[in-house]
Length: 288
Image 1 (cartoon, rainbow, N blue to C red):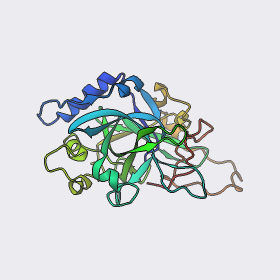
Image 2: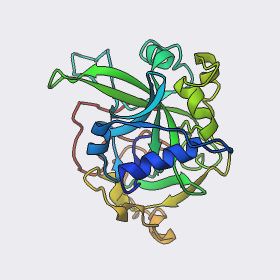
Image 3: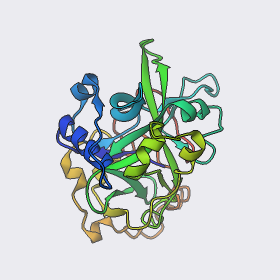
């Protein structure tokens, strides 16, 4: 799954320039991106992006590539027990093209979520240890996503929301978690957005695969990441190996507790250790 990620590019114009340059990879010219002023106004470097955050996404708009603001998390259509809507931060790539919740967006509203890293966790509840996965050679990640317009349950206003597609973990991620975001190569972006010649849903679906081994580097980082109230550059400081290692339990400790989840277990989307709660009730999402 992907429950938190980072985008620490210093300003919005630099982000646009980096995206344009990456889309021109392979000898082609840089491809222009229409930048929405609202996305520019709301942008700042982020080190702990969580569901319900407004974030810029790249999508097709009138045949052009546009960087627009969107809120992370689809609102589920089917609440349980009369509860409010839940946030669907992730969608499994297998079946997203056909499942009722996602098929319309897959057909007509695919998007790319720019990032420069994402977090996954290991360890028992109450002592989660985050690892930051980032491009081995630096630069940006282009995560495959879907968009949908939705009415805010609190204000009644319609905004754009996005979810991130996940797939089986690559060799780079598998030791920490069994799933990861779908990462698009620069030459795949136009096909995914639907602006390339011959683009269709079937060809787009073929892009939903684990990233090649060696794409990502891993770094154990500060457990301060566990709370969404923390959002600063120090979150990405490398953690010493001895600090990252699990501590031995005291004799007899933990007997009354439930078994610790295995590595790659489901992570609450918002707060591991008493940080801010979600804007929309989420509970615990299924693994995606």
